[in-house]
Length: 295
Length: 250
Image 1: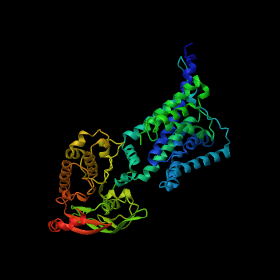
Image 2: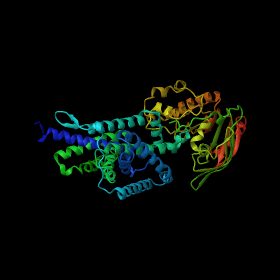
Image 3: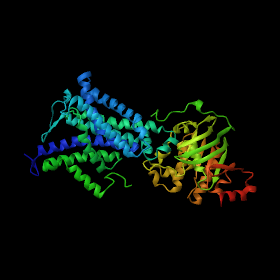
Image 4: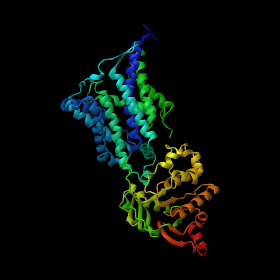
């Protein structure tokens, strides 16, 4: 059997794939955080809760309304995104003129409320969402076994990340978003409805988190705490990539997943901390992040 | 996207030539607790080029910002083409056909030159085409793929002007467009203003460089302490020159 530095190839590739899948979730979530931070200047601590709500909506939608996976993939981001827009209109807008720290506190409080209420009804143990029929089984690649669903998650995450990048960097609406990030009052003076743009942006960022939640539902146990566990790592990813950089969020997310996977192969004890070590290094050497602009 | 940029309806814009384009009455403007404008009264007729002169801090830039609803709070009356705008949301005011060029130019670093140029939404038909704009500012065409803020100061100023010409705005509010620029660029901007006036644009120019503004303008308003203290027509200018110099402290 082929060995890589004393590890069987299949094990090595398997961990790399797991890392890449985790990285895809980091990328989707840090992308949403970056988009929201860009225009609203809010560190959205409710992002993990939105991811969790995405997974829960998918699970409950199937259990009570018989909504299948594909419909959930489409509907859940819309529903959770609309909820996010409501939060922006009713809550975040009222404190938009205050220090950004208030936005952080408010979203953190919201996350605790969402988590707490769901724990109250469903407990913390979590439930399983079945893998959709079409994704049962996998591909035998020779050097490893690739479960179909994991391949799909990777593909879907990369497509959505690329589409988001394209919208922001290559379209007219994206130009409004970038310009609104820099100078919102001048954008108003050009006739752009910036408050509406802010609402849509928050809704979009939240919808990305919910989309990640749907993808995660068949992969991880759906539990009220699944978001907060993930969010801490995602914040480290955002710090490493640089706040507000779209491409940085995606590339760093995938790269950190891979680094985590590699660490699992060679020094499993450090797998949970390696990303934070990278974060410390980056903060020491490049405080604005790998893709961030120095202030 | 259509919601973000609401399309103007025809009825919002009434074309009556020679008529009053802008009428400001007893305008007060505030930034937080500070009271900046103390009852500004002025009017601008269609096709006129009017300057706002005055020393630093007299309230000239704030008057333009107040027209665009970019100050904290404002009271009084600002009629644009017969429409009262004091209660209007900021993003609706440009839709009355107003283009604003801020003092700091406001070129976006995250957009290239052409994206900057195409950024402001069209507010009504009849704006200059992108080809006409590039003909007027050939430098911008050559540098259209550069990052907006990589341009020289003069090119950034031209970009800031050019992008509001595309929108179809019929009244331009220009804040200190010659500030800090080389004489050859200032001359070019003067030529552009003449072309715009010939196209029938209404222009309100906040200017420090009186020698630049004097030959272009139909009328001058002089501001002091947040009020208009003097109105001087182009014809009166020669006889009032000394008086004006005393007011401006030059």
